[in-house]
Image 1 (cartoon, one colour):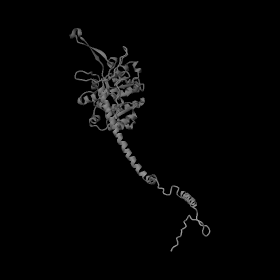
Image 2 (image 1 turned 120 degrees about the vertical axis):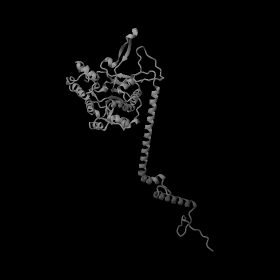
Image 3 (image 1 turned 90 degrees about the vertical axis):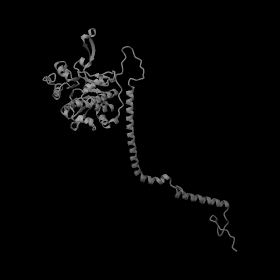
Image 4 (image 1 turned 45 degrees about the vertical axis):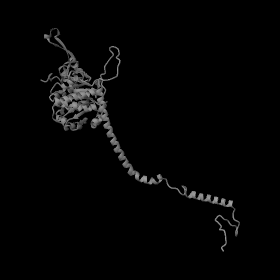
Length: 426
Protein backbone atom coordinates (compact mmCIF):
# COMPACT_ATOMS: atom_id res chain seq x y z
CA UNK A 1 0.00 0.00 0.00
CA UNK A 2 1.59 3.15 -1.03
CA UNK A 3 2.40 5.67 1.51
CA UNK A 4 0.16 8.71 1.55
CA UNK A 5 2.94 11.23 1.42
CA UNK A 6 3.16 15.04 0.61
CA UNK A 7 5.29 16.50 -2.11
CA UNK A 8 7.29 19.51 -1.10
CA UNK A 9 6.56 22.32 -3.45
CA UNK A 10 9.14 24.72 -4.66
CA UNK A 11 8.12 27.15 -1.99
CA UNK A 12 8.55 24.57 0.79
CA UNK A 13 11.74 25.18 2.71
CA UNK A 14 13.38 22.56 4.80
CA UNK A 15 15.87 23.02 7.46
CA UNK A 16 18.59 20.52 8.28
CA UNK A 17 17.48 17.01 7.51
CA UNK A 18 13.83 18.00 7.48
CA UNK A 19 12.28 20.98 9.02
CA UNK A 20 8.96 22.38 9.84
CA UNK A 21 7.04 23.76 6.77
CA UNK A 22 6.75 27.52 6.30
CA UNK A 23 3.53 29.14 7.37
CA UNK A 24 0.91 30.31 4.88
CA UNK A 25 1.84 33.98 5.32
CA UNK A 26 5.53 33.30 4.80
CA UNK A 27 4.85 31.48 1.58
CA UNK A 28 2.85 34.43 0.24
CA UNK A 29 5.64 36.84 1.12
CA UNK A 30 8.21 34.70 -0.64
CA UNK A 31 5.95 34.43 -3.74
CA UNK A 32 5.56 38.18 -3.88
CA UNK A 33 9.32 38.68 -3.58
CA UNK A 34 9.98 36.18 -6.34
CA UNK A 35 7.31 37.84 -8.54
CA UNK A 36 8.83 41.26 -8.04
CA UNK A 37 12.27 39.92 -8.90
CA UNK A 38 10.96 38.28 -12.07
CA UNK A 39 9.14 41.50 -12.99
CA UNK A 40 12.35 43.49 -12.70
CA UNK A 41 14.20 41.02 -14.91
CA UNK A 42 11.42 41.13 -17.53
CA UNK A 43 11.29 44.91 -17.39
CA UNK A 44 15.01 45.03 -18.08
CA UNK A 45 14.97 42.47 -20.86
CA UNK A 46 11.66 43.61 -22.50
CA UNK A 47 11.32 47.33 -21.98
CA UNK A 48 8.33 47.51 -24.42
CA UNK A 49 6.48 44.64 -22.76
CA UNK A 50 6.59 40.91 -23.05
CA UNK A 51 3.60 40.79 -25.43
CA UNK A 52 4.33 44.06 -27.28
CA UNK A 53 3.23 44.36 -30.93
CA UNK A 54 4.52 47.25 -33.04
CA UNK A 55 1.89 49.78 -34.09
CA UNK A 56 0.53 49.80 -37.62
CA UNK A 57 2.43 52.99 -38.43
CA UNK A 58 5.66 51.47 -37.21
CA UNK A 59 5.11 48.29 -39.19
CA UNK A 60 4.34 50.31 -42.31
CA UNK A 61 7.20 52.79 -41.94
CA UNK A 62 9.68 50.78 -43.92
CA UNK A 63 7.10 50.10 -46.60
CA UNK A 64 6.21 53.77 -46.82
CA UNK A 65 9.81 54.83 -47.10
CA UNK A 66 10.33 52.38 -49.96
CA UNK A 67 7.17 53.42 -51.83
CA UNK A 68 7.25 57.19 -51.20
CA UNK A 69 9.55 57.94 -54.12
CA UNK A 70 7.31 56.11 -56.59
CA UNK A 71 4.04 57.42 -55.18
CA UNK A 72 5.21 61.07 -54.93
CA UNK A 73 6.15 61.13 -58.59
CA UNK A 74 2.71 59.85 -59.57
CA UNK A 75 0.96 62.29 -57.28
CA UNK A 76 2.89 65.26 -58.67
CA UNK A 77 1.99 64.25 -62.21
CA UNK A 78 -1.65 63.86 -61.23
CA UNK A 79 -1.71 67.23 -59.45
CA UNK A 80 -0.10 68.95 -62.43
CA UNK A 81 -2.74 67.46 -64.70
CA UNK A 82 -5.50 68.67 -62.38
CA UNK A 83 -4.01 72.18 -62.17
CA UNK A 84 -3.70 72.37 -65.95
CA UNK A 85 -7.31 71.29 -66.37
CA UNK A 86 -8.48 73.88 -63.82
CA UNK A 87 -6.49 76.61 -65.56
CA UNK A 88 -8.16 75.79 -68.88
CA UNK A 89 -11.56 75.85 -67.24
CA UNK A 90 -10.69 79.17 -65.58
CA UNK A 91 -9.68 80.72 -68.90
CA UNK A 92 -12.93 79.59 -70.49
CA UNK A 93 -14.97 80.95 -67.57
CA UNK A 94 -13.16 84.30 -67.78
CA UNK A 95 -13.88 84.44 -71.50
CA UNK A 96 -17.57 83.80 -70.88
CA UNK A 97 -17.66 86.40 -68.11
CA UNK A 98 -16.02 88.98 -70.36
CA UNK A 99 -18.44 88.29 -73.17
CA UNK A 100 -21.39 88.67 -70.82
CA UNK A 101 -19.92 91.84 -69.32
CA UNK A 102 -19.50 93.39 -72.75
CA UNK A 103 -23.07 92.46 -73.68
CA UNK A 104 -24.30 94.02 -70.43
CA UNK A 105 -22.32 97.19 -71.14
CA UNK A 106 -23.81 97.41 -74.62
CA UNK A 107 -27.31 96.67 -73.37
CA UNK A 108 -26.97 99.17 -70.55
CA UNK A 109 -25.82 102.12 -72.64
CA UNK A 110 -28.26 104.95 -72.23
CA UNK A 111 -30.21 102.98 -69.60
CA UNK A 112 -28.39 104.02 -66.46
CA UNK A 113 -30.95 104.00 -63.70
CA UNK A 114 -28.85 106.22 -61.43
CA UNK A 115 -30.42 109.62 -60.99
CA UNK A 116 -28.27 112.71 -60.77
CA UNK A 117 -29.20 116.08 -59.39
CA UNK A 118 -27.75 118.79 -61.64
CA UNK A 119 -25.60 121.45 -60.05
CA UNK A 120 -25.80 125.23 -60.52
CA UNK A 121 -25.90 126.88 -63.94
CA UNK A 122 -22.64 126.43 -65.84
CA UNK A 123 -21.34 123.71 -63.52
CA UNK A 124 -22.92 120.67 -65.23
CA UNK A 125 -20.76 118.48 -67.46
CA UNK A 126 -21.65 115.18 -69.09
CA UNK A 127 -19.50 112.08 -68.85
CA UNK A 128 -16.94 112.13 -71.67
CA UNK A 129 -14.80 109.13 -70.85
CA UNK A 130 -16.45 105.74 -71.29
CA UNK A 131 -15.29 102.89 -69.00
CA UNK A 132 -12.80 100.43 -70.42
CA UNK A 133 -13.72 96.83 -71.18
CA UNK A 134 -12.61 93.95 -68.98
CA UNK A 135 -9.39 92.52 -70.51
CA UNK A 136 -9.77 89.04 -71.99
CA UNK A 137 -6.40 87.33 -72.50
CA UNK A 138 -8.10 84.22 -73.89
CA UNK A 139 -8.74 86.16 -77.12
CA UNK A 140 -5.06 85.88 -78.05
CA UNK A 141 -2.72 84.57 -75.31
CA UNK A 142 0.37 84.94 -77.50
CA UNK A 143 -0.32 88.59 -78.28
CA UNK A 144 -1.21 89.21 -74.63
CA UNK A 145 2.22 88.00 -73.57
CA UNK A 146 3.95 90.28 -76.10
CA UNK A 147 1.93 93.31 -75.01
CA UNK A 148 2.76 92.70 -71.35
CA UNK A 149 6.43 93.06 -72.25
CA UNK A 150 6.15 95.99 -74.69
CA UNK A 151 3.37 98.27 -73.40
CA UNK A 152 3.88 101.06 -70.86
CA UNK A 153 0.88 101.82 -68.66
CA UNK A 154 -1.27 99.68 -70.98
CA UNK A 155 -0.43 101.90 -73.99
CA UNK A 156 1.66 101.44 -77.12
CA UNK A 157 2.19 102.60 -80.70
CA UNK A 158 1.16 100.02 -83.32
CA UNK A 159 1.95 100.02 -87.04
CA UNK A 160 1.16 97.50 -89.80
CA UNK A 161 3.77 96.93 -92.51
CA UNK A 162 4.56 94.72 -95.47
CA UNK A 163 7.56 94.59 -97.80
CA UNK A 164 6.18 97.40 -100.00
CA UNK A 165 7.04 99.95 -97.27
CA UNK A 166 10.30 98.43 -96.01
CA UNK A 167 12.46 101.55 -96.55
CA UNK A 168 9.95 103.86 -94.92
CA UNK A 169 9.55 101.42 -92.04
CA UNK A 170 13.27 101.61 -91.29
CA UNK A 171 13.08 105.41 -91.17
CA UNK A 172 9.94 105.13 -89.00
CA UNK A 173 11.37 102.92 -86.24
CA UNK A 174 14.81 104.58 -86.36
CA UNK A 175 13.22 107.86 -85.30
CA UNK A 176 11.13 106.18 -82.62
CA UNK A 177 14.34 104.74 -81.18
CA UNK A 178 16.10 108.11 -81.45
CA UNK A 179 13.33 109.83 -79.47
CA UNK A 180 13.51 107.08 -76.85
CA UNK A 181 9.97 105.73 -77.11
CA UNK A 182 10.00 102.17 -75.68
CA UNK A 183 6.39 101.11 -76.19
CA UNK A 184 5.87 100.41 -79.87
CA UNK A 185 5.14 97.32 -81.95
CA UNK A 186 5.23 96.43 -85.65
CA UNK A 187 2.56 94.05 -86.90
CA UNK A 188 4.49 92.24 -89.65
CA UNK A 189 2.34 91.25 -92.60
CA UNK A 190 4.97 89.07 -94.27
CA UNK A 191 8.16 87.11 -93.53
CA UNK A 192 10.45 89.82 -94.88
CA UNK A 193 9.23 92.46 -92.43
CA UNK A 194 9.27 90.01 -89.53
CA UNK A 195 12.93 89.14 -90.26
CA UNK A 196 13.88 92.80 -90.65
CA UNK A 197 12.38 93.76 -87.30
CA UNK A 198 14.02 90.88 -85.47
CA UNK A 199 17.40 91.73 -86.98
CA UNK A 200 17.06 95.37 -85.89
CA UNK A 201 15.81 94.64 -82.38
CA UNK A 202 12.35 96.05 -83.15
CA UNK A 203 9.36 94.58 -81.24
CA UNK A 204 7.35 92.63 -83.77
CA UNK A 205 4.19 90.54 -83.86
CA UNK A 206 3.23 88.16 -86.67
CA UNK A 207 -0.40 87.17 -86.72
CA UNK A 208 -1.53 83.58 -86.98
CA UNK A 209 -2.44 82.60 -90.57
CA UNK A 210 -5.70 84.17 -91.75
CA UNK A 211 -6.52 83.80 -95.43
CA UNK A 212 -8.79 86.84 -95.50
CA UNK A 213 -6.06 89.08 -94.11
CA UNK A 214 -2.95 87.42 -95.54
CA UNK A 215 -3.94 87.85 -99.19
CA UNK A 216 -4.28 91.62 -98.77
CA UNK A 217 -1.29 91.87 -96.43
CA UNK A 218 1.17 90.34 -98.90
CA UNK A 219 0.10 92.01 -102.12
CA UNK A 220 -2.16 94.93 -101.19
CA UNK A 221 -1.35 98.55 -101.85
CA UNK A 222 -1.24 101.37 -99.32
CA UNK A 223 -5.01 101.86 -99.00
CA UNK A 224 -5.76 98.13 -98.92
CA UNK A 225 -3.25 97.49 -96.14
CA UNK A 226 -4.50 100.56 -94.28
CA UNK A 227 -7.97 99.06 -94.15
CA UNK A 228 -6.67 95.93 -92.40
CA UNK A 229 -5.86 97.81 -89.21
CA UNK A 230 -9.50 98.00 -88.17
CA UNK A 231 -9.66 94.21 -88.03
CA UNK A 232 -6.24 93.75 -86.47
CA UNK A 233 -6.66 96.38 -83.73
CA UNK A 234 -9.77 94.76 -82.30
CA UNK A 235 -7.76 92.11 -80.43
CA UNK A 236 -5.55 94.78 -78.89
CA UNK A 237 -8.59 96.54 -77.45
CA UNK A 238 -10.13 93.30 -76.22
CA UNK A 239 -6.89 92.65 -74.33
CA UNK A 240 -7.39 95.99 -72.55
CA UNK A 241 -4.73 98.15 -74.26
CA UNK A 242 -5.01 101.71 -75.56
CA UNK A 243 -3.45 101.94 -79.01
CA UNK A 244 -1.82 104.83 -80.84
CA UNK A 245 -2.22 103.65 -84.41
CA UNK A 246 0.48 104.96 -86.74
CA UNK A 247 0.98 104.78 -90.47
CA UNK A 248 4.56 104.26 -91.68
CA UNK A 249 4.93 107.65 -93.40
CA UNK A 250 5.29 109.43 -90.06
CA UNK A 251 8.33 111.01 -88.40
CA UNK A 252 8.36 111.03 -84.60
CA UNK A 253 10.12 114.05 -83.11
CA UNK A 254 8.82 113.87 -79.52
CA UNK A 255 7.06 111.27 -77.37
CA UNK A 256 3.35 111.47 -78.31
CA UNK A 257 2.20 109.93 -75.02
CA UNK A 258 3.26 113.15 -73.28
CA UNK A 259 0.73 115.12 -75.34
CA UNK A 260 -2.47 113.05 -75.20
CA UNK A 261 -5.61 114.00 -73.24
CA UNK A 262 -7.09 110.50 -72.92
CA UNK A 263 -10.57 111.89 -72.27
CA UNK A 264 -12.32 110.39 -75.30
CA UNK A 265 -12.86 107.08 -77.03
CA UNK A 266 -10.96 108.33 -80.09
CA UNK A 267 -8.33 111.09 -80.20
CA UNK A 268 -7.21 111.73 -83.77
CA UNK A 269 -5.02 114.02 -85.84
CA UNK A 270 -6.81 116.13 -88.41
CA UNK A 271 -6.42 116.62 -92.15
CA UNK A 272 -7.32 120.26 -91.53
CA UNK A 273 -4.71 122.98 -92.04
CA UNK A 274 -5.97 125.81 -89.81
CA UNK A 275 -8.29 126.40 -86.84
CA UNK A 276 -11.44 126.41 -88.96
CA UNK A 277 -10.78 123.30 -91.00
CA UNK A 278 -9.26 121.29 -88.14
CA UNK A 279 -11.72 122.16 -85.37
CA UNK A 280 -14.91 122.98 -87.29
CA UNK A 281 -16.73 126.05 -88.52
CA UNK A 282 -20.13 127.40 -89.49
CA UNK A 283 -20.31 127.26 -93.28
CA UNK A 284 -23.15 129.42 -94.65
CA UNK A 285 -24.78 128.15 -97.83
CA UNK A 286 -26.32 130.84 -100.04
CA UNK A 287 -29.40 130.05 -102.13
CA UNK A 288 -30.70 133.38 -103.58
CA UNK A 289 -33.91 131.86 -104.96
CA UNK A 290 -35.13 131.37 -101.37
CA UNK A 291 -35.34 135.13 -100.86
CA UNK A 292 -35.45 135.99 -97.15
CA UNK A 293 -34.33 132.43 -96.24
CA UNK A 294 -31.50 132.34 -98.76
CA UNK A 295 -28.81 131.68 -96.11
CA UNK A 296 -28.59 128.17 -94.66
CA UNK A 297 -26.07 127.49 -91.92
CA UNK A 298 -24.11 124.25 -92.06
CA UNK A 299 -21.42 122.80 -89.81
CA UNK A 300 -18.21 121.60 -91.41
CA UNK A 301 -15.02 120.00 -90.23
CA UNK A 302 -12.19 118.41 -92.18
CA UNK A 303 -11.87 114.69 -91.68
CA UNK A 304 -9.87 112.86 -89.04
CA UNK A 305 -6.81 111.11 -90.38
CA UNK A 306 -7.24 107.34 -90.04
CA UNK A 307 -3.46 106.92 -90.23
CA UNK A 308 -2.78 108.38 -86.79
CA UNK A 309 -5.24 108.13 -83.93
CA UNK A 310 -5.34 107.09 -80.27
CA UNK A 311 -8.13 104.69 -79.39
CA UNK A 312 -9.11 103.51 -75.90
CA UNK A 313 -10.40 99.99 -75.10
CA UNK A 314 -14.08 100.85 -74.70
CA UNK A 315 -17.28 99.37 -76.08
CA UNK A 316 -17.88 102.31 -78.48
CA UNK A 317 -14.28 102.01 -79.73
CA UNK A 318 -14.67 98.31 -80.48
CA UNK A 319 -18.03 99.00 -82.13
CA UNK A 320 -16.32 101.61 -84.33
CA UNK A 321 -13.72 99.08 -85.49
CA UNK A 322 -16.42 96.51 -86.18
CA UNK A 323 -18.51 98.99 -88.16
CA UNK A 324 -15.59 100.16 -90.32
CA UNK A 325 -14.22 96.63 -90.90
CA UNK A 326 -17.72 95.39 -91.77
CA UNK A 327 -18.35 98.14 -94.31
CA UNK A 328 -14.93 97.74 -95.93
CA UNK A 329 -15.58 94.03 -96.42
CA UNK A 330 -19.01 94.74 -97.95
CA UNK A 331 -17.81 97.78 -99.94
CA UNK A 332 -14.33 96.83 -101.20
CA UNK A 333 -13.97 100.02 -103.26
CA UNK A 334 -14.53 102.27 -100.26
CA UNK A 335 -11.70 104.36 -98.81
CA UNK A 336 -11.05 103.39 -95.20
CA UNK A 337 -10.57 107.01 -94.07
CA UNK A 338 -13.93 108.09 -95.48
CA UNK A 339 -15.72 105.17 -93.84
CA UNK A 340 -13.88 105.80 -90.55
CA UNK A 341 -15.15 109.40 -90.44
CA UNK A 342 -18.68 108.59 -91.57
CA UNK A 343 -19.11 106.02 -88.82
CA UNK A 344 -17.56 108.33 -86.25
CA UNK A 345 -19.55 111.50 -87.10
CA UNK A 346 -22.88 110.65 -88.76
CA UNK A 347 -25.75 111.02 -86.25
CA UNK A 348 -28.64 108.66 -85.78
CA UNK A 349 -31.48 109.23 -88.24
CA UNK A 350 -34.36 107.23 -89.71
CA UNK A 351 -32.99 103.88 -90.82
CA UNK A 352 -29.59 104.43 -89.23
CA UNK A 353 -28.31 104.23 -85.66
CA UNK A 354 -25.25 106.37 -85.14
CA UNK A 355 -22.22 105.49 -83.05
CA UNK A 356 -22.20 106.90 -79.52
CA UNK A 357 -18.46 107.48 -79.25
CA UNK A 358 -16.67 110.49 -77.78
CA UNK A 359 -13.90 112.09 -79.86
CA UNK A 360 -11.20 114.75 -79.64
CA UNK A 361 -9.20 116.51 -82.36
CA UNK A 362 -5.45 116.67 -81.76
CA UNK A 363 -3.57 119.98 -81.94
CA UNK A 364 -2.80 120.30 -85.66
CA UNK A 365 0.50 122.10 -85.02
CA UNK A 366 1.75 119.37 -82.68
CA UNK A 367 0.38 116.46 -84.69
CA UNK A 368 1.14 117.99 -88.06
CA UNK A 369 0.10 116.84 -91.51
CA UNK A 370 2.32 117.60 -94.48
CA UNK A 371 -0.05 120.22 -95.93
CA UNK A 372 0.39 122.31 -92.79
CA UNK A 373 4.16 121.87 -92.95
CA UNK A 374 4.76 122.65 -96.63
CA UNK A 375 2.05 125.28 -97.21
CA UNK A 376 2.30 127.20 -93.94
CA UNK A 377 4.96 126.30 -91.38
CA UNK A 378 8.07 126.29 -93.57
CA UNK A 379 7.17 129.79 -94.84
CA UNK A 380 6.63 131.34 -91.42
CA UNK A 381 9.69 132.32 -89.37
CA UNK A 382 7.82 131.96 -86.08
CA UNK A 383 6.19 128.64 -86.83
CA UNK A 384 9.50 127.19 -88.09
CA UNK A 385 10.77 127.40 -84.49
CA UNK A 386 7.97 125.13 -83.29
CA UNK A 387 8.95 121.48 -82.91
CA UNK A 388 5.95 119.22 -83.57
CA UNK A 389 5.39 115.86 -81.92
CA UNK A 390 5.00 114.08 -85.26
CA UNK A 391 4.91 114.97 -88.94
CA UNK A 392 2.68 112.85 -91.16
CA UNK A 393 3.56 112.90 -94.88
CA UNK A 394 -0.02 112.10 -95.79
CA UNK A 395 -0.63 114.80 -98.43
CA UNK A 396 2.32 114.01 -100.70
CA UNK A 397 3.28 111.01 -102.86
CA UNK A 398 7.10 111.24 -102.67
CA UNK A 399 6.95 110.20 -99.04
CA UNK A 400 10.39 108.73 -98.40
CA UNK A 401 12.22 111.74 -99.83
CA UNK A 402 10.14 114.16 -97.79
CA UNK A 403 10.51 112.05 -94.64
CA UNK A 404 14.28 112.33 -94.92
CA UNK A 405 14.00 116.08 -95.49
CA UNK A 406 11.87 116.46 -92.35
CA UNK A 407 14.62 114.72 -90.35
CA UNK A 408 17.25 117.02 -91.85
CA UNK A 409 15.19 120.08 -90.93
CA UNK A 410 14.00 119.22 -87.41
CA UNK A 411 16.72 116.84 -86.20
CA UNK A 412 19.89 117.95 -87.97
CA UNK A 413 18.99 121.65 -88.11
CA UNK A 414 19.38 122.10 -91.87
CA UNK A 415 17.18 125.16 -92.36
CA UNK A 416 16.81 124.87 -96.15
CA UNK A 417 16.07 121.11 -96.20
CA UNK A 418 12.40 121.70 -97.07
CA UNK A 419 12.80 124.58 -99.48
CA UNK A 420 13.11 122.73 -102.81
CA UNK A 421 9.81 120.85 -102.46
CA UNK A 422 6.61 122.22 -104.05
CA UNK A 423 3.61 122.95 -101.84
CA UNK A 424 1.64 120.13 -103.43
CA UNK A 425 2.47 117.08 -105.49
CA UNK A 426 3.25 118.74 -108.84
